Structures are given as C-alpha cells and as structure tokens.
Image 1 (cartoon, rainbow, N blue to C red):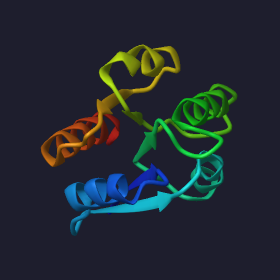
Image 2 (image 1 turned 90 degrees about the horizontal axis):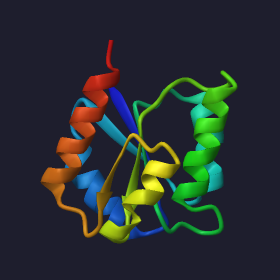
Image 3 (image 1 turned 135 degrees about the vertical axis):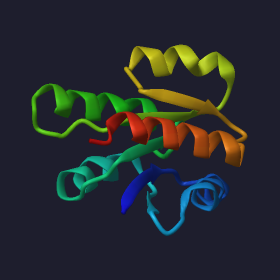
Image 4 (image 1 turned 30 degrees about the horizontal axis):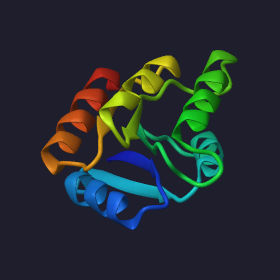
Length: 125
C-alpha cells in the first residue's frame, strides 16, 4: 500500500487528488497547512508529497524548501515532491526549490494520476 500526502486547505483540490489517486493500492492523506508536513514525514512512510502553492502561512514553496533542507541534512528520507501551481508562470518557482515535478491548476484527474504514477515508479525499489 502506498501513501500520497497532500498539503492543501482547499477542499476542491483535495477532492480532485483523492478521487484521482485513492484506490485499493494507494491512500491519500491530507494536512491543511505546510507546517504539518514535516511532522507527518518524520513518523510515516510517504511515497509522494503534493503541495498546494497557496496554503496558509507556510505555502508549498516554503514547505518544499523545508523538506529539501531536512533531506540535505540526512534527517529525512528521499521523497518526490510535486507542487500544485496556480499558473504556468509559476514553474520557475518549482524549479528553484528543487520540486521533483508540478502541475498547474485546475487539476485534471488524468494528469494527476500520470504524475503520481510516474513519480512513484521512479522511487520504488
């Protein structure tokens, strides 16, 4: 069983991701704030992290930076991180923070599934 962690305060974003990815082999776990991501990653094995660009006072960019810093200090396992961007022009932000990949909202279920399947395949043993 694999786990996808999504950080979003938007019910519609969560519902789109959950409906595209939840099945018998994969669960989607949600947190509503960026600062909740690292504590979850420290106690649970997560196969993919999806970060909404705009979430509360610690958005996707800051959260991705925090994850990469913890990985750089060997305090966190390697996990693919994808950003859910508001517009195509935000791609450079995802590249700057070393996001593994990204999608631009509005989200398409086929794109979500393709992104998750591809990223999780790259990291599976």
